Length: 172
Image (cartoon, rainbow, N blue to C red):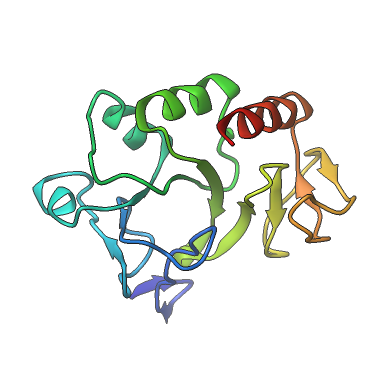
């Protein structure tokens, strides 16, 4: 539980991008553990490694520190967690994650209490807006239907989307 604005709120569970969620190590204290999703608030260490995660959810700096490691159990995804206002992943950062882990990369923007504000889907065509609490400022938006079938608006970066499409096609 956390206290926000004087109110006690229960933390959310990480929203895994493609259900069902495999064993997932979450390396930030923004969430609570449930089922296959386990939170390791101290970051990557012996306990997280012993969980043998098929997926890892962490901030870019945490994942960047893991790039040199060979994590044998990682078979499903890397989920990059950001806070509102954080700079989103660059093409180069995504390529680094792919080279190191050889699993799909998903990005999510997370608010207070683990609230999912925006999330990348399996089509990798931007981050779907999941909550009206996300301050969009003047960020570019895509309102056309997504390749995943959803019609919610998405944050987009045209250069990144083109790069992701070609990388996704190559990975198939």
